[in-house]
Image (cartoon, rainbow, N blue to C red; front, side):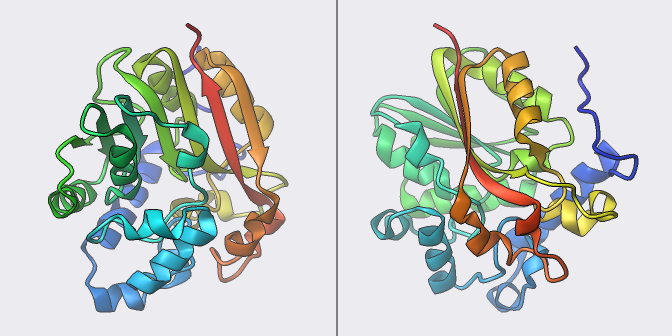
Length: 280
């Protein structure tokens, strides 16, 4: 089995370049000042309309499916207005479970998961951007979340033990990986038997316009790196997941079309709920 995911065209970015531009983009988002964030262009971050003031990020989160109560329950700057759905609505997280968040960013989904698992549970957030991990740890202190652990690492090489988590969640991050098959194999490895995967991400529904696959801004903004539903299903099956379900969200065009100033990306991209389970 190859570690490399076949690229859609010969114009696609090479993996090293893709990782670099994604890391640089999110380092910038993690360290920007409030004034810089307020002026951020919509193409400057993944899965967002560019609004980053607290009122705007809260509105974005509710548009993605989070309740107002959930958004207001997280303190600090954990909610950056990023994402394309609400993986918590898919995960059915229970008290006492261990949750792993792929691409945890500033920690928003981790802190919500921490509330769900309680003090008897545990949450692990993995992100490859040092600046994001630092920001998440600062937010952990503000949220008094002692059961959340943020780790620096790539989602293709997860810094977690075999069969150590009950649930893997992720919000619009796996599309950024140049090696998605390995991400799913690593997720499968980390899950305990019977564990589950609950992911919000984007999928390709039509041909991506010429040039976008090799455009760094488009790749880093979740516009050009997604796979088709059939390809994702194949990856999940190959990794060993059962009960795989990939359900497009037909109403996601409301926010997806805001991600690029030059293209209506909803013509070829849609948000989807992606779930699977590791056999007992």
